[in-house]
Length: 156
Image 1 (cartoon, rainbow, N blue to C red):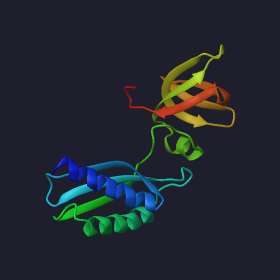
Image 2: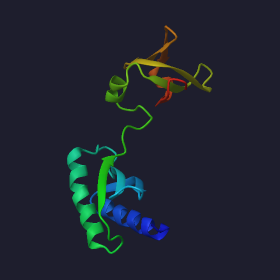
Image 3: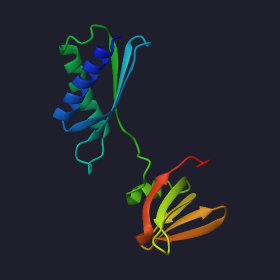
Image 4: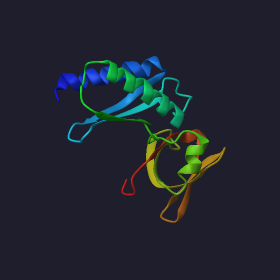
C-alpha cells in the first residue's frame, strides 16, 4: 500500500473524528493482515471528557462510512476505534486510587526550591501529602511541592 494511500486514510479518519468532537492521537494500518486492519486511538477535544465505549462505537460508524464512501481503498478492512488509554501522568484523585502500589516517579521541589526526582511505589495522595514506599520506608512529600507524578516501569 502506498504512503499516499496511508496519508489519505489518516486524513480522512482525522477529519471524521474532528467533525464529531474528537482528535486522532494514533493511527496504524496493518496491511499484512487479511483483511487489512486499521486501528485508531482518539480523545475528546474537550480534555475534561473521557472517551466512552459508546463514543468509540458511534465514531466507528462515521469513520467506516467515510472510508467506504471514499475511493481511497477498495478492499475489505477491519476498523478498531479506541481511547488513547491512561496517560503516564497521574492527575486526578481516581488516578491515585487506581494505581496504588504501582511504581512512580515524582518530580518535586525540595527545601531549597530546587527540582528533584524520586521513585517508589505509590501509597496514597491526601490533601496534605503524597506518600510513596521506597524499599519499605514511607516518604512523604508535601502536596504543594509536587510538580508531577508519572507512572514508570518497575526498573524505572
